[in-house]
Length: 248
Ligand code: IPE
Ligand code: IPE
Ligand code: MG
Image (cartoon, rainbow, N blue to C red):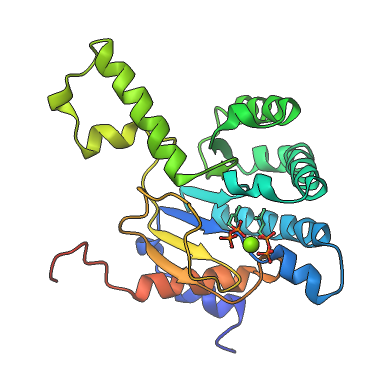
């Protein structure tokens, strides 16, 4: 059996050492399209297929949380036509896939400044959250209008409000309390952070939460990222020694 065969890769995974939370910076849709002399939007459309593939596989493997960086606060600087296409694709994904996602026990969670998203998108997010509220499988956490710095600033605002209204005293602030105020407050922190398309940067994603995440960067463009690539990333993660600053 070839070493990159999916069956072989699956059998190489240690089910007892799975990352609990995988976070992905889905990058390279534009370049994928450009290489084919297609408009960027075609890359985004193709990228949605990868989203389906990755969500399905994470569910099969029993991953608890999958966070996908879908739209950053900086992405508003892109051409309006591209932004509209991204919003449309998101809404289409939610509507087209909902039945299957429910069948697969997926539960939606969203992070970011959601109140600044178009009204119709906000309505769909609410609908998706309610439809999947009782599901107990994979938590599909979509980062939309997300910025790691905004996440921290918004947490500070909420925490200081709770100090002013007497819920906590200033002396009680510590890391454990603070992170409950982040958009990811109810979620475990990422164990594995994947970025596609080879860029060696974080681009304002989960700044606080990735303090000890293992980083995996692949040159593959997001539309080409397959089941085999995700399995390889998990295998690579499992070979690493997580030391958390200590000695083993
Ligand atoms: C990632 O692909 C998708 C989003 C940011 C929504 P890009 O659109 O950033 O693709 P490149 O980086 O231009 O190739
Ligand atoms: C990061 O990709 C944001 C998302 C994947 C949504 P970008 O393509 O926007 O980031 P930069 O511009 O390469 O830093
Ligand atoms: Mg990009």
